[in-house]
Length: 173
Image (cartoon, rainbow, N blue to C red; front, side, top):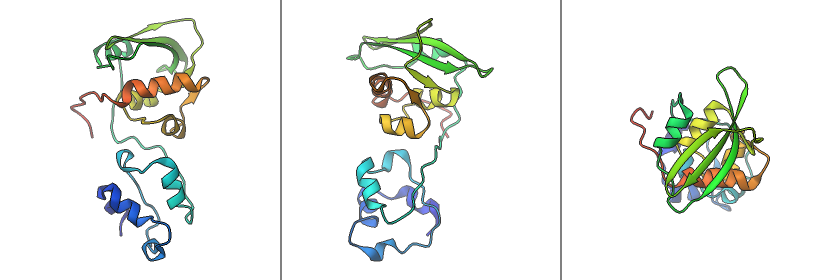
């Protein structure tokens, strides 16, 4: 079984594969098993099913997206119409410095403006692209990918703002 073979398995099949009490299903010789973000079972279920194996998590982003104009990208993206929030974030600049921004979402529209307020969530440019594309489905997945947050509520709000509406990315790899 190669590592690519598990990428297309439905969730029920994966649950059966890692079911507790079925040792005959755990005899793979594969050194690495890779899952797509959207096919993973809930985090506690996954860890319980993999308890007999040594697991590691690595960040992997299946697209090549770079946001060149942050304010314009935020303005043009679709946002939840029922969400009203303002979250201070710090985003790594092209020169490695952190720029402070205030993300504001209201009535389905988003805006990000420079601010002096200390960021509650710290993002690299790559993490910004993943968040923008709806890649973080939970605060746990964001933290596992290295996103730092001073406030759990601020991180939860950021994740919730992009988790339901994914942008159309014509150059999605």
